[in-house]
Length: 174
Image (cartoon, rainbow, N blue to C red; front, side, top):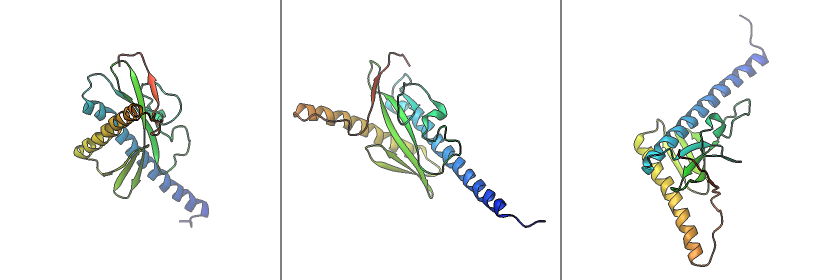
């Protein structure tokens, strides 16, 4: 058997990195999909009220698949934090808001940050109870933002888009 070359050693290290980056993406994507389907159920809406969307740029309330993740189209999958957006229907008349989440594996946890909000740690594997706790946090985040903005208006201090929410109106019966 021949001695490995430096290139063989480099290729082995890159292969290990690649396996870790695929595992990281699979963890984040699985969580994102569970959040997308579970949060709508948590809200008690009978229509489809949450979609995975890109974390930035224009969006419509529809499923983007792998295009909903910050690593989409990057070729070599980077290892690290991955962001994704959730389009959440917030009215009966077709108004949607985008929440941006970022997730990153830290040891035995998958840490999730809500843009403009709090962080949340999921111990792996992710339990349904912990997911429900996260839904409560997202619900609080959204309702607090709307209430804070209305309170600012009522008191003569207009709120800004400090949480980075983006609204769209879509005429659809999703």
